[in-house]
Structures are given as C-alpha cells and as structure tokens.
Image (cartoon, rainbow, N blue to C red):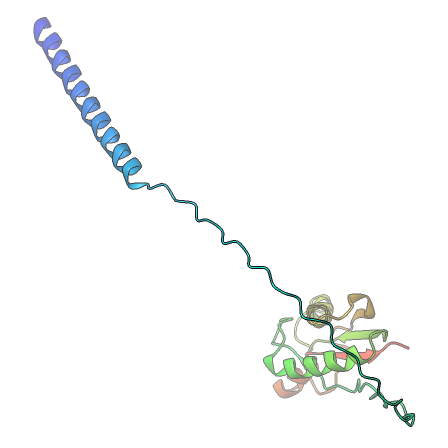
Length: 191
C-alpha cells in the first residue's frame, strides 16, 4: 500500500511535468508567431520642398484723393427688451419645461445687448407641499434659470437668485391650470 502511494505520486509528477512542458511549448510557439507577424515599418523619406518664387510687389498707381464723405449719423443701437414671459417648470421639480427654452433664448439675446445689466431671478412654486419645501424649490428653480444663462455665455455675477416659495401667485392655486402658471421664475432688472 505504501508503494502504491509512491507510485501514484510519481504518476502525478510526470503528468504535471508533461502539462508544464506542453504549456511552455505552446507559449514559445505563440511568441514566435507573434514576433514573425510583426513587420518592421520602413521609414518614408520626406520629400524635399521645392523653392517657391516670391511674386514681385505690385506697383502702386497714384489715384486722385477721394472726395470727403458725408458723416453718417451713428447707427441706433436697439434697446434690450427685458419684458419676458414666465419661465415654467415641471410639477415638484426645478426641471425647465421645453416650452421655456425659446423664452430663455430670447432672454439671452436681449441680455447680451446690455452685458453690464444686473438681474434678479425670482423663483416661485405652487401651493402644494410644505412652506419649507416650496421655498427650497423656488430657489432651485431660479438657480436652474441662472445655470441656463451661464451655460449660454452670460456672466453669473449679473444674477441674484431669490426664492419666494408659494407667495405672490399669479393665478389661483385651486385649479391645476393656475398651479401650472405659479410654478415659474421671473426675470427683473435690478435697480
């Protein structure tokens, strides 16, 4: 029995040696094939640039002096229009409604006409929820508009964010249509 265990150990060692040799042979073969398939890249000779002749400078002809032009009145700069509609939001969210994007784009265009003007972004909510939640939501809504303006290239220092919660509704909170109108941010020029 003792001899049987020794014999089994020798068989196991032989199998392990054969497996190791087979593995090394396969590894060597794979390495050789990989090296053979990698071809060296030839350096391409750079073409020699052809010298380019410079054209002769043009000969200037003397022209009579131009008649003095009449001074035109300076072009009138269009005054920015900051009377913008409400910017609306989804229910219980500071995600802008897609219908608000054209209004915001118009606001950006007008604000770029007067880059030093300061604005107050007044955020509001409808009456659903606690007063604390509505206050935070109104601040988040005003900040969402500010972020839109900053991403459009406006100076963030020109905007002051104010949250009003469900105060100052522009419509009744007794109907869904009224609550939709109250979920808004208004843009006012800071005086």
